[in-house]
Image (cartoon, rainbow over all chains, first blue to last red; front, top):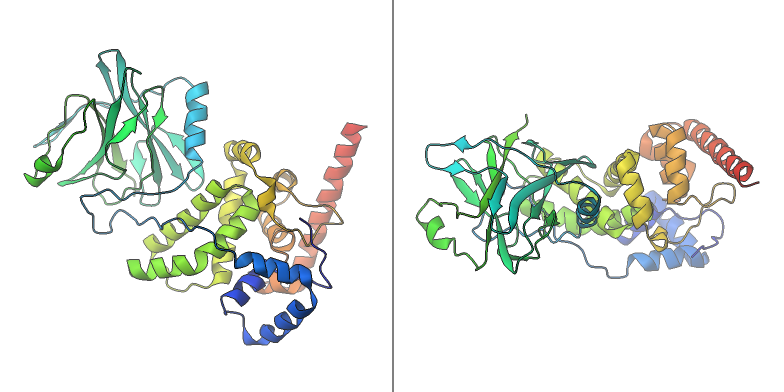
Length: 234
Length: 165
């Protein structure tokens, strides 16, 4: 819709500032006078007052964590990117050596299972650029998890992150997974801190109760798990 | 922003305006949400304290332009665009509407400063004085950049006519 303004139109910034009552006083009278005489600009101002849903604000991961996931209800274009890539690209295999820690051993990012292969991939967005299977993170990065698994029935997926002595679930828990090639998990997440992380995918045919493991202070990964290691980048 | 509640307060106050601006520019709801979320994530990480809408408007403009500079992003933006999100157009460049396709082509020919001025003039409908205040430069400088933009728009349209004939 193109509007014809009487004279010089008010800018969108001025209209937004007017609506927020933040216009510098020197400009307020001029803006109000213009609005009285210009239907086009009045229509634009009216459009600013229309209610529209506001996505929740994503918090950095060094905000105090909870057992329940920090769900990021972003509708990302990444879903379209990941699906498009899955249709057109070969699987990117990330060979991650086993990382030995005093209390826990992490598997690699690929696992042969009945019916095919289980694999976890990450897509990182940094400053508008996307990288597949990254090896580093900074706090402003955002990650999407993509899963490859054989399409043989319903599976439940959990993404678990291990960092030093901390365990957390950055995505909605026990997502019902329609297996295929690089299927994106719902939601996106960020990472922070100065310790390396292991991002692990746990897949099961029944919902998994991690609570008892978390309460005991340790968590053994189930058999059908794959992990990707990321190093903090300074 | 020192605390989460402060960050959420600033977000609730300014994010709607920033989303509207990003949508106009990117013609894509999801991309616009990405840009605004990324901005606030950075602001919280950097603990930026001095914020007003003009500052955030400029920050969002540069984030959107950076996103559009990536070739992969461009293809995705063009394929996923909703032209209706451009919104009402009150300022044109010599009677030519600057849409997403033309904007991306112009960005190939203009430097960052001219691209930024292009957005403020033809997407945000700012007058030259307002742009000069926002960027802390003279009105004359803005006038020169607008002139450069107009030249490139004419050149692109002439090239398109030449190809079509």
